[in-house]
Image (cartoon, rainbow, N blue to C red; front, side, top):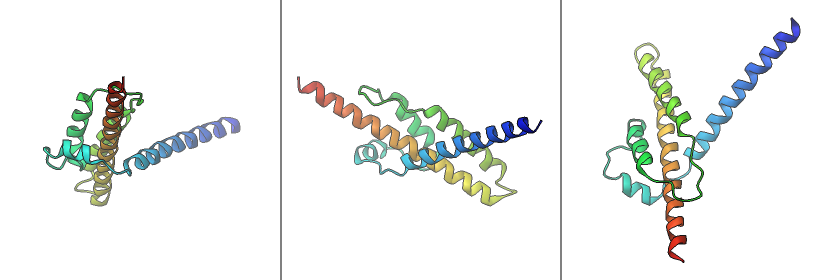
Amino acid sequence: MFAALIFVLSGAMLAQFVVFFWRASMLAVGAQPVSDLLRSAESSFSNALNQNGFATIMAMNQICPDMGSHSPAKLWQVRCYHRAMRSVAYLCKAVVPQASAWARREMASCTKYVAVSMDLRLQSNQDFVAELRSY
């Protein structure tokens, strides 16, 4: 019985570590600056780099081909996290406004992560095209 309790607690701690590690890596990537190339591409969209522009940036990311050796980002995880934070923000709006504000900040972080991912994809595509032109 005691061994089962230790096993369950260690599994829960491992799951918590995985979630915190994933979130920290997402925030680290999202903290990178976005290039002028992406800013000029999104300039036609109003407020695309805030929590409300997540769908816009995701749409831009889906129509942009991945031609280089850049490994595709796992954006489904970020999309699920963004949906969860959108639900938290909606549910906590009237009851706990601080939690709603935190969820909106997390949504903005998700948007920033997708923007940086899109920027890396555009840079990879430019490098690939430059390599093709050298032949």
